[in-house]
Image (tube, rainbow, N blue to C red; front, side, top):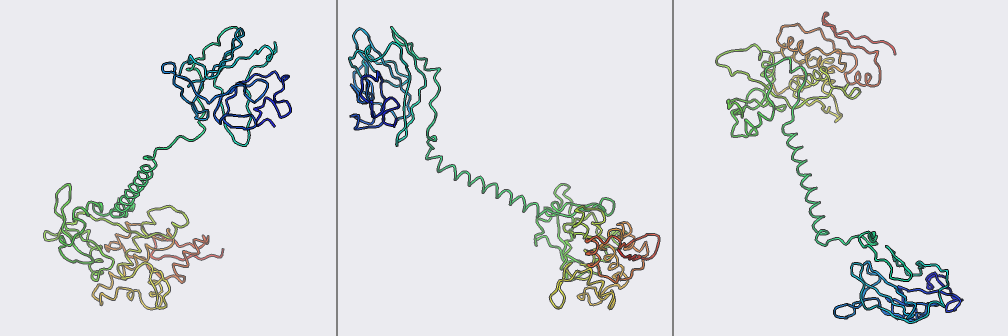
Length: 450
């Protein structure tokens, strides 16, 4: 095995004069077999790994003459000089840190005639081997000369020692870095939460038809700031279908009254219908001028599940559901007496088929409303929330119906529920066509086998 023999000799020829080997060993293992003095020594070997002379690694200071030890496995670069004088037969070995000049006093000196050891033709180089304990020694550069000193090595041109171990981490960084990272993550999370809450606070619904119809629209954020978040101290009273708040617009400093429409209002279908029917035509010095409006919530049309595309007709659907919710005093998805979920549109249609349409009006009103206006508003809600987009009217027609400028088409409750029609449409029954021609007075139901 070459392990303890450094790749030079073996167990059978160690010490033979026929080996003709001269070496300087930098040994980091103490091997009693070779009479090593320590696990950090420099030795002169001639034909054997039992050194003719050895000493611990280090150097002598030129000024004080003191000996300074060096550790061969310290990961610090060092320089070794091996000199031989053929006349005096003296071998000198000198060791020093890399950036230090050659000390005047050698580390080791031995007298031996190397002419009997080294033949006329010989190899010069480096040899090492690995045993049970691993260590690495790197040769960064070397020079050689005969009949004179070897050329000095240019330290600036030497490569850097490779890093055997990870760079030591600062204890301070090990403590501070996780804390700073956690703080940054928490800060970013808090910012995202605040931004999301702010977005939800000021979120609102904007539909295409609002560009063409209706008065000026205000952003919910402006109204929120104007009323100081709809605080009770700004409450003027409870009006038709909601509470009224005093406010001041931030930019124009104009004083305004904001009616916040409530879906849970105990008043108001009569007032609500009256407002949406006549709000565009009522002008009087004693009436508060309507400056604008704001909307926040909407409803999803059934075709959005298939097309994922919002259109003007999906906005009409949302308006229709809103109208039905207000007039009936019910949520879009309600529960029957048995606890089963029921769509508001289906409930209105079934009620219309079995009894009368007016029976769906919110019972809290106790009959205090105009029956004709209520029926028109209910039919507008049903027409706008039709599951087939083509059957829904335009917003211009909706306003004409509510203002009494255009007669409502004759509507007949479908033999199938709107929920079933929606399911059939979503499953591909395109042959079920619900058309809405503006030139006729009824909606035709065309049913064809698929």
